[in-house]
Amino acid sequence: MNIEVFSDVVCPWCYLGKRRLEAALESFDGAPEVTWRAFQLQPDAPRFGEPGAGELSVTALQKRGYPPAQIEQMQGRLTALAAAEGLDYALDRAHHVNSFDAHRLAKAAGRHGRADAMVERLFRAQQVEALRVDDPAVLARLAAEVGLPATTPAEDEADAAAVVADLQEGRAIGVNGVPFFVLDRRLAVSGAQSAELLGRALAQAATVPDGGAADPA
Image (cartoon, rainbow, N blue to C red):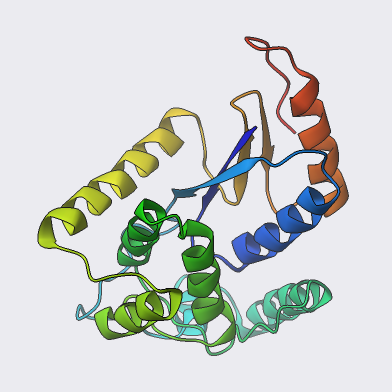
């Protein structure tokens, strides 16, 4: 089975979804391959060096009209849910950044069989450590921590093209929110669902005959 996970490293729900998928896989009879697909919740977010790049996510939410009390409530709920999965979120210090280059780094890691390790490191950098995951210096350090070699301009271009292909694929199959799990192209689960629900979806997808289809959750 192949599990495609459309996610965005700047999305705290996606890190939560990753942990719940890992919990579901612990009790699944099999060894599915997990493929990380790029998605951008805010593709128009400023890139590194552009005006507004790197401002606090709280500030970005306030600019979008969210009142402080609502932001605090939202972050408190998410932080509590993350803590239940062993994640120590720092949402009040997280930066609002464009995630394209982080996704490109994840694609580079995938060429070396280290996609999951890189995605995990990027999530932790953004959601727990409040690092700037659009900063080339930060990304270079994270890549070195995961053990990735330096890339060439041609590889960077190919990895960027792979990110664009994921974004186009997500739109083509109707992904409009993340995390979004596609199980063997037979069944889809939207959102950071519980490990129990993901486990049931995995079991259902495993029983659908080749060429069949299952209703998405």
